[in-house]
Image 1 (spheres, helix red, strand yellow):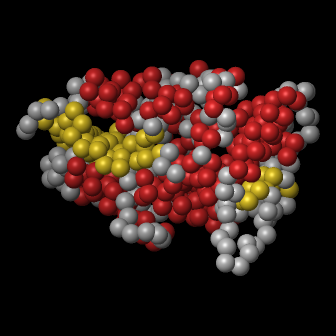
Image 2: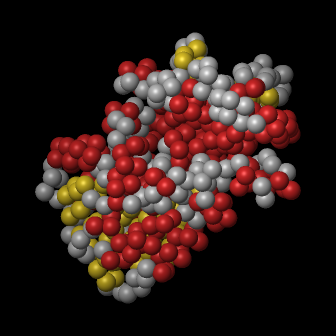
Image 3: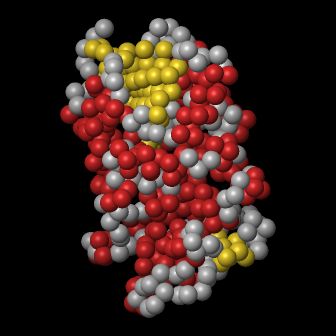
Length: 425
């Protein structure tokens, strides 16, 4: 089947159609090439799975009295929807949403159902044929020193104002720790500080501590550590993050205590009493995990402590994902891979680090993502004014809902892990 030459329609925030820009979104603007057989198989398998699951397919009517509305999916263009999935699997599923070919009144609920039953979507006899319809990760996304800079630039240098449109005033882009559920957006700053303070406590950061942070973000952890009296060296590859982090740190009066460096973790120099790294390992890539843990070990004084916050997934799921080009790796985090707890433990041990504690709190990330998603959705006008079109907005709504579903379903977890070299101070 030749590519469909017609530009695909996305949907504006007000519900009116919009053409996807083929220069900016080539794989959304035009339908891919796929054989009729693959499209028919996708329609049979996916269509059948949607009907078997606890979903309302193509039904946005109000539920009957006394019943609860189930997550729904309304497919506006079935031909395009199944063609994309037949050609590109889950990448096609996400691109179809970006193109406005399907919708849901409860996107995270829908994706949670799918994540919970991900192993049931394809019949067991056909799972061994997975390699026939998934794509390998492109070599250009490898996290070499140059590749890592480019990959970080593609996500974190989009716009500080974009991130500020949905993050709380601490500009923390990682899971918070709440005291109760459901959480409100007003709870986020305190919950983010609770998360940071817990990590600093785990790393034994106090007055006089020499602290290395790998992954600056927008500087909130460095600020909290400096307020304790620590001297902080913090590393980032994002020029936009570094600029704003320095400004925030200077405004708080901690410029002399915090050194923000545009630096790869592989180039770190010196030794520190403690190392903290928050949701950084996911951007490293499996190929470079030995280098990452070697850098952690090499940066520690004897008896020092490493406190990590890391998203994790099951080990077999990680192995499958490592060999696959996914929608997330294509559009959100190029070169990234979520590790398993086993991978972290084994790579840490190989570098001479021992796991001292390991605490998970997936439900807190689901709440964090829900609040970000709601804030992002409410800020569509601001996002549009920043120059991000409707396809981008649907991409990010899907990304935030997709991530929330991962934690809701427990397909993903988030953990705070303490590593030491086994010596006492």
